[in-house]
Length: 118
Ligand SMILES: [Cu+2]
Image (cartoon, rainbow, N blue to C red; front, side):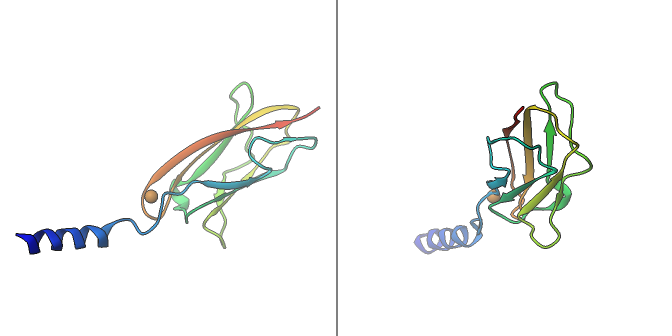
């Protein structure tokens, strides 16, 4: 019995996830920032490699209208980085919502705001 418990404990340790979930590490422009000039795109860096087919970012204005100029996409060279092309943004506050699937198959999501000044 005791050896069985040890065997189970050992197998649990071996199957425990080797990596953490993917969370937003940082972004450019920075999370929560206010800027004078509207950015042409956003870049979001995550803490783990992402599955491109199940990871995305949407950006909406104060009325909830999407302001992305095409699909957000995971960088071809860096699977922790997502690029988000944007339309020409007027002054206002925008919400950036991200949802990602990391290569350890865990889903995470979050959001933050960006403000373009007058
Ligand atoms: Cu995970």
